[in-house]
Amino acid sequence: MSNLSIIPLSVSALVFVLFIVVIYLWLTLNNSEEKINQLEEAHKKMVRSFNELDEQAKLIVKTDLELNKAQEELDKRLNGLNALQRTSRQIGQALNEDEIFDKLKSSLFEELGFSKILVVVNDDSQVPKARTHIGIEDLKVKQIVEVLFKDDYLKSALNEGHPLSSINSSRKAREKISQIFEIEHYVLIPILTQTGLLGFVFVGNLPDAPAVTQGDEELIAILAGQIGQAIENAQLFDKVFRSSQELEIKVKDRTKQLAKALAQVEEINRKKTEFISAVSHELRTPLTSIKGYAAILMAGKIGVVPDAVKERLAKINIHSDNLVNLINNLLDIARIESGRVDMRFEIHKTKTIIDNIADLLTPQVTAKEIKLKIDISPSIPEVYIDTSQAERIFINLLSNAVKFTPKGGIITLSAPFVSDKGFATFQVADSGIGIGPADLEKLFSEFFRVENEINQTVKGTGLGLVLAKDIVMAHHGKIWVDSQFGKGTTFSFTLPTSKSAFDNIKKITHTT
Figure (cartoon, helix red, strand yellow):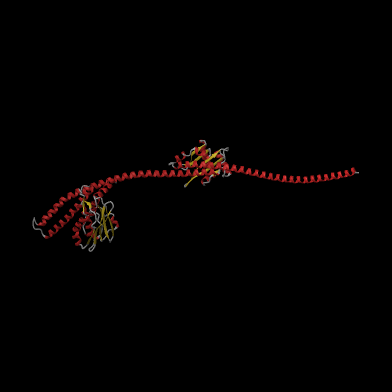
């Protein structure tokens, strides 16, 4: 009985246990599927992350390659710019075209990264001529130049200033240039000046070399511009140099002509002076006799002379005196110009000289009812002069002023200033009829007399101003005149105030 009851109980327990196991297995299976799902999701995320990392790695590698390429390009351009800077300095100092192209060495183009180079420039006859070529046979150079300039398309592109390269040329241009130069990578840049197309610069590489870049094109364009500028500068220098040489030759020729003309003038002046001196001496003897005989006749020593005869003898005496004065003036001018006058320079008080001259001219001034105004400061320095000669300057100028100043006029003698070189300036100003501009230029010429009413009635020789000028120049001074027609004339002249001032001007004059 007890055994039967135990068996059902065990089965129940077993069933329970199996139930429990089934439940456990079911729960365990559910948890595994969830974990599997979680693992699958994690795997998918991992795959996505890996793919993203792979893309980023590829991007980094690509960027690194691009950076390396950009760095290489930058280094290449920097090296090229350094090479261009050195070459630019060298060709910028060149004074002729040959020297410019001598500076375009193969090392420059090696640094720029090219193996074939051709620089063509028009000569004086505007014929294209190869000036520099590297990596191209001599026989090929002439053929290349002829073919290139015969091609209307390429010639037109160059004339218009268009750069041509293997990266920007049209297919047609690229094929033509590649065929002409037997090259694949190239840059062809025109050399332009203000007058137009002067030539071109070609650089190129073989197919196995790296392709040219925009930077290469820019560098060659800079080089072409520098060559064009250097050629213009050299041509300008050559033009200026030739002009300078021509001018120098002309100056030398003209100097010789002027020296010859000056020698002739000096010889003519010397002969003129000698002639005037000789003639004047020859005239003085008969004039002295004429004057003497006239005086004897007028004195009645030979017999009684009628009044009509005395009147004519008096005229002979007056004209003889005028001729004597003329001869004396001519002799003085001749002596001063030839340097035969023994001038004695000494220090004299200016006021004393002026007072003496004023006293001497008082009768003339009073007779014509003219006012003579002396405007000389008491503090004016002394003057270093030959007093007998210098007084003639004042006398001639003041007498001239009296002659051309109408009744009631004013004549002013003044000394307005002393220059820093030690020369006192004197002025003789009148309120007379004045002198026209055309006559001012001739005023100090020998025997020149201004055409006016006064000169038509008053006799004169036209030598007073010439003599005054010669005496002023003998003192190393200057003389000049200012005048307004109808308003008066002012004569100005300078005299040294010391021996040192006189010697300094003398030294400068002899040096020049």
